[in-house]
Image 1: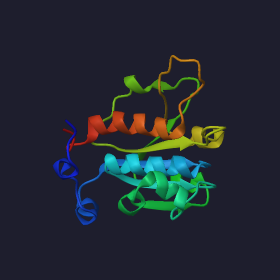
Image 2: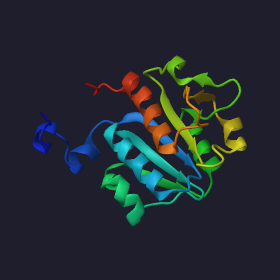
Image 3: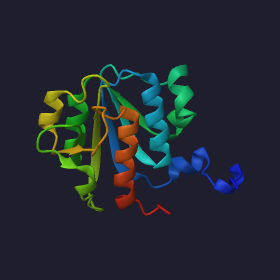
Image 4: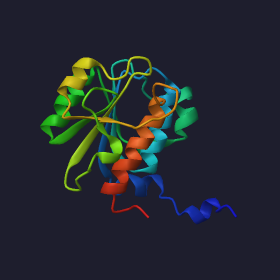
Length: 178
């Protein structure tokens, strides 16, 4: 039998804002789709991600298409807009975050082989639906991580990729996992 909403014991918005966050920042490099952005916000809320950086052409809240998939999570998850992705990379590198680009590149580490260290902070960089993460951004990252795939398609949707990567990091970082 499905759980009732009351049985899920979710935090209120105020409790969520005060709660400890998973030390992950998402950096969205020129994502085009508002629906993808909304889905990423919703997943980030589920894993109590620290912040989302919306860079370049990435749409920002409020917008009805973002809200449709975010279902209120644009209010719970902190976010910041950057005119370009390099500004976000610079800020988070200076704050000691490991810059992890999620992309299919030569010498990438398979996600299932990437060991997340509990005392580190991570920035997961995700790219545009057509072109992926920009080459200049890849070159400035500390590590490239690839999600293994065995089907006929060339890649996951960016919202799906973000969810898979967040889950991998969350499982190894969060004291709140059940």
